[in-house]
Image (cartoon, rainbow, N blue to C red; front, side, top):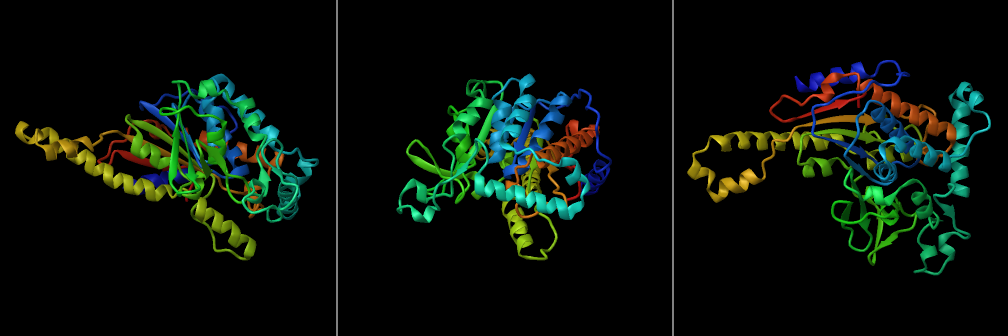
Length: 392
């Protein structure tokens, strides 16, 4: 029955695009978490998601992100609510390139648009992205082994300054929003979380989460070097599933879909490999959590019925300490690329594509918020419900 209801919701939510602003909404949860996957240029979709949430009066108090999701998340957590959408707009306009013929491209068919997107992506490969990364003077193999220049194709020396332009790190490290990101220790391979509850977050932590090799260089933090957290896990969902201490409404925003068609040529092989590698596997995570959470709820109910002497036993206390009766709704939003987008979509930084992805994120979120059930606490044994904006 639960699966059927989720599928029904997914089909309803794929209706016509929404153009009007969402009305202010109320939800029944104690906390709202916004979780942002990595995906380079596709991250404009997440900015659109946030704009729709903010317009509906849904303000996250926990933002978790990886790679580009860490950057978007830091802009959200590192600004006052009224300034966040404007800061996101300004950031994305800074790192994207205006196109000369948007009307022609919008009406010229998929073939013309594919050529334009590929040319735009190649411009990013050859010339870098303004303020974000720039190509090195020579290919890395022409530098001496062990040299920092021999370890990546691009440098990101100016990126910290760009982040400080759009993020107030004093606000980010305040008490209003919990911010979490991750990176991978290059030396020992450990997956490391950076959370403003336990340390001060700076530009270097955000940069470390997005330092995807071999394109971008590792970032040094406290004597260790770190790469993109997406190398191990590109989804922040398990952070909330394991760490939330309140009833939580979760918006999981994915830039890669785990499901897709069989490739027809080598470039589609590259695209499909990326989708599989970086997809969040949200279904698997929530299915596993649902099963475990059902047992937590069951034992918590049983514990209340135990006689006092059994409740005081070490075994019962240990089990009860692991039992949470928190409730969760997970609203899963996935970016669905257009037919003309191919293997280069995550480094195609044209202004036209950014605006289209932003609009898609806004519309998908606004359609989802039409369904009042996602704002209500779940009534089920598992204590968790999952809603998808479209079939996955």
